Image 1: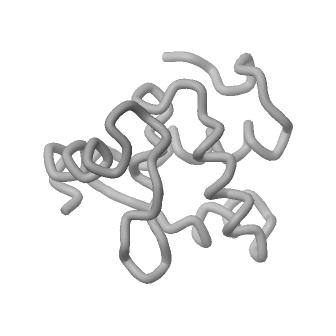
Image 2: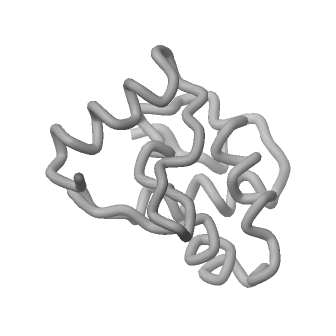
Image 3: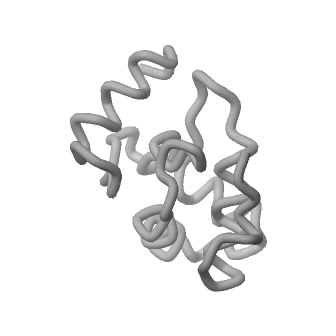
Length: 94
């Protein structure tokens, strides 16, 4: 698996990507939960932006990050939100 520390990005982005790697298959975390886990509890939008900047959206599973209201949010990988929904369904998270 690719180490997010070796990927191009800011320290903040790398910390978000590391958190994404810790989300187990079949589970999701909200952008807020990820922000809290990395020590920036008021940075939910920045977490969402870091997910959008993820250069390896399947390897680093940004599809497992969702909005606090339960909606899926965005997905920068190929196929957009439809792919995010499909991946989450296949993993049993929806």
